[in-house]
Amino acid sequence: MFTKAIVRTPGKSLTNGISTAGLGLPDYELALVQHADYIEALAACGVEVTVLDADEAYPDSTFVEDVALLTSECAIITNPGADTRRGEIIAIKKVLKDFYEHIEEIREPGRIEAGDIMMVGDHFYIGLSERTNQSGADQMIGYLEKYGMSGSVVMLAEVLHLKTGIAYLEENNLLACGEFLTKDAFQKFKLLEIDQDESYSANCIWVNGTVLIPMGYPKARATIEGAGYKIKEVDVSEFRKLDGGLSCLSLRF
Ligand code: CIR
Image 1: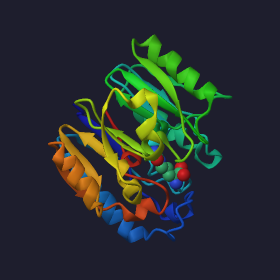
Image 2: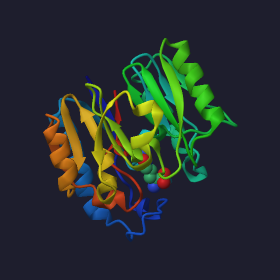
Image 3: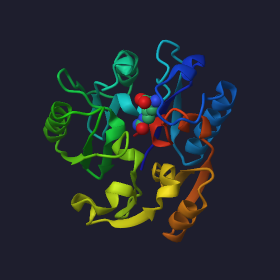
Image 4: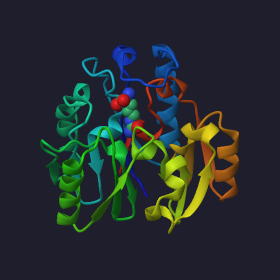
C-alpha cells in the first residue's frame, strides 16, 4: 500500500521539455488542469499528496519519478541520463530529507532514471536504456542489497524507459507491450497484453487496488477491468506530448 505521493506542478517552461513524440507542443493551461486531475485521482486512492512548486529552470521537472527511487527502507537519488535533467536532483534531495532517514545517491559514471525501475515487492527490475547505464544499475543494485532488497537488469531496445512499456499491477499481474511480452524475466508473471496501437497505455499505475490508466485506450481499459481491477481514467494528453505518462508524474511510497 502507498500512503504518500510527491508531485511537481508543471512550469511554463514545460513547452521546452525533451520530446520525441512528434505530437506538437503541450498546452500549458491544459497541462495544469490535467495535473490537478491527476493529483485528485491519487488522493482518491488514499494517498497524501505533497505538491511541489513548479521549477521553471527544469522543463521536465514535473516528471518527478525519474529523479529518485523511493523504497520502504531508503530513498536513492538518481543521476539522470538526460543532461538537462541532472540539476533536478538538488531540489528533490532537500524534499526527501523530510520523509527519509536513509538517503543514498547514484554517482558518475553511473546514470539512471527511475522511470527505468519497476518495483515488484522487494525486487526491482532496472532497464538499461539510453538514460540508464550499467554503472547506474550496478550502484542501484548495491544500495538495494545494502537495505535487504534486490535488483536485476533488463535490456531495452524500443522504448524510452522500462515503465514506458510495462506496469506491475500487483497480484502477479504484469501489463506489458511490445518487446516486454517475450522477455524471459517476465514470463513468471500473468501477462496482460497491451496492443501496439495502444502502446501508450502500458504506462499505468496501481495505487492501493485501483489502476490509474490514461484516458482514451478502450482495449487496455477492457483488459485491466477484465482482470478484476477498479480503474480510474486520467487524461494526460499534454504530458504524452513530452514522452511522459502516468507513472512519471509522481513518486509513490
Ligand atoms: C524526458 O524525456 O525526460 C521527459 N520529457 C519525459 C520523462 C518521462 N518519464 C518517465 O517515463 N518516467
